[in-house]
Amino acid sequence: MRIRVINPNTTASMTTLIEASARAVAGPGVVVEGVTPAMGPASIESHYDEALSVPGLLAAIAAGERDGADGYVVACFGDPGLDAAREIAAGPVVGIAEAAMHAATLLGRGFSVVTTLARTRGRALDLAVRYAPAGACRGVWACDIPVLDLDRDPAALARVVAVARQALARDGSDVIVLGCAGMAAFCAQVSAELGVPVIDGVSAATLLVQSLITLGLRTSKRDEYAAPLPKTYIGPLTEFGIMRSC
Ligand code: 2AL
Image (cartoon, rainbow, N blue to C red; front, side):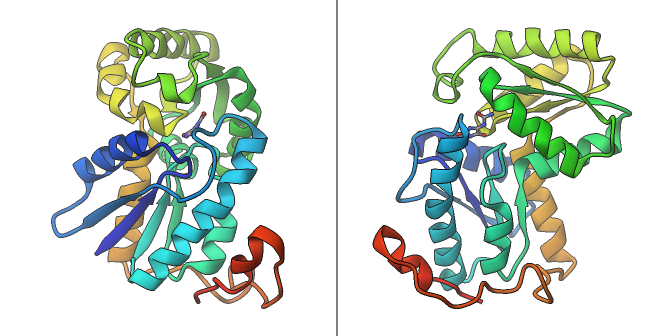
């Protein structure tokens, strides 16, 4: 079984960390391949970044289809391009916010998300409406650390722990969701400090994709997630008119 874990931002060192988190949980015989897209923003922390990460992500999914990948993780907490990715993938595609929030609802009554910059809170709140029953997401808190500083700021882990502790107290929640793929390596330490389940979406999504593939389940092509209709794309997007693969 081959699972492609796509980091929708173009920072290869972050892909390496994401791949390590996915490999650490994947079962025996599962090949985890981290992918950095060939185009897009260095990090994703605005709606603009997120929109412009999608072409590179979709090109990576199309390449995965050509290479015979069995399933995909979209490893950015905004779940950019997730529905479009499903339209061109045969196997399952799972976003890390999707996996983490669903897992959180199985482990407690209410969860809080700790994200990077305050401006990313809105996207996380929108996704919580989609993925969690009303009231299950009790708050989204920003640690005010930019994505690419998470692994180079020595104070980042302590800051995430402090914000998560405050979130638990203020929200009355009992589960923490880490709101960035760049926080994956913090998961065990944050959980040990706080004594509650802490969910890294990279690990959760990897195991969810693995489970779906093991169950023989693939993306439904009956209706909404069928291949997009053939049409012409022009300009820098010309190749996207012909990249549909299923
Ligand atoms: C993210 C993420 O997971 N990757 C990225 O570039 N930005 N999320 C976030 N909340 O900033």
